[in-house]
Amino acid sequence: MILVIDIGNTNIVFGIYKEEALLHLWRMSTDKQKTSDEYLVTFFNLLKINEIDPKAIRCTILGSVVTPLNVVFQDLIFRLTEKPCKLVDLSCFPDMKVEMDNPLEVGADRLLNASAGFAKYGSAMVIIDFGTATTFDIISEKGSYLGGVIAPGLGLSLEALTLKAFKLPSIKLEKPPTVIGKNTVHAMQSGVVHGYAGMVDSMVEKISQELGLKPKVVATGGLATLIKPASSTIEDIVDDLTLLGLFMIAQKMDLQ
Image (cartoon, rainbow, N blue to C red; front, side, top):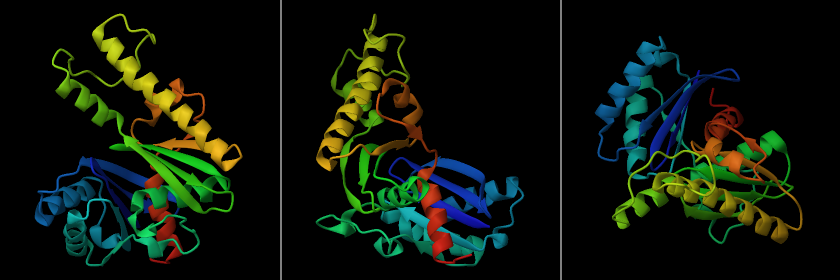
């Protein structure tokens, strides 16, 4: 079995692969204040509930954009499985050319999404990840990482709106019944859902113009299912694309 872990700014997502199948998937909130002991208890209990022997985990691969937690997780994984944890970095993508001014500044999650997306589709792509930030990653027809776009995430935008506008309430993030809101809640939901869908479609159009071709447009992340119905450009949703990228690296590096 292979344990894959994706540490994001908002959530930590991790799962167990056996052969080609993702057997288990868990999510928890990211907390930079927690110690390795606290995370260890959570991991141990989740594995125990699902009748998984930690010693049966042959390798663990970790992708992280929260640097302070890297050492914490490497420590807890060694204590849990008695095996070292591999941290993803740029060297894990020898077959993918990263055409950035400074390739080292690209987040591991974005490289993982790009490599997994190209392996799945084998074409020029735009991968939109609806996470803490909304990111667009652009992959060429040959699989090169060309660059990307970073915008505030839906949750961040909504949080800023309710914090700064005194009369606007906290609302549930869901699609409103109409684009024209008939009350404050529906008006805010429309602004976020249809506003972001419009941003996505406009951005994809501009990216396509720069590329001189029509790329495959794929979405991932927790809010992808909310935006796709309102978007005219998103073609597919691939759940847990980052975890797939982690698993692919484990296979390539023969960590099993």
